[in-house]
Image (cartoon, rainbow, N blue to C red; front, side, top):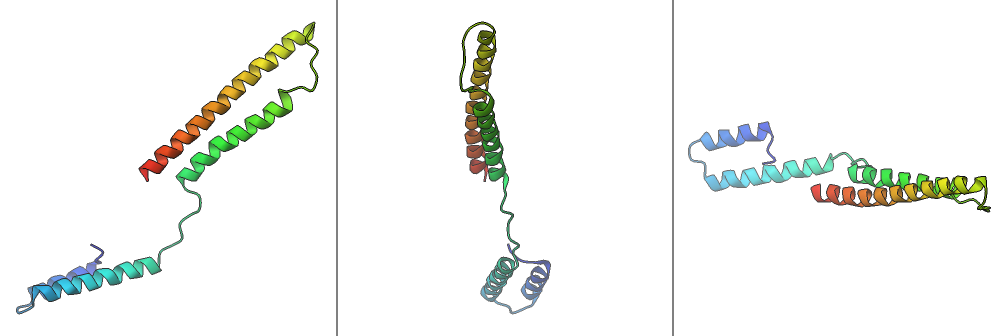
Length: 122
């Protein structure tokens, strides 16, 4: 109702007085409500710039960037000689690469779904 306790007390007192028109009381209530809304709007504290939606967007994005950095640094060698002991080594790199790319896709999908959910809940 946007009326504080002092406003409510004064309105109930004016309603209990004999000879008071209800329309004047309603007008008084609306004036008080608008006044209280304006005061609340003027004294409103600034909202923090990081909210849930931003956090849920940053976490998967940071995970994706970290995985991409690891992939390009450690999982894509410049030259590979695919014989001897290098076969097993390179096959492990390819398996790791597939696992990380799967994690990136899953993190991206989860990030989009969580952002949609938090946007829908707000």
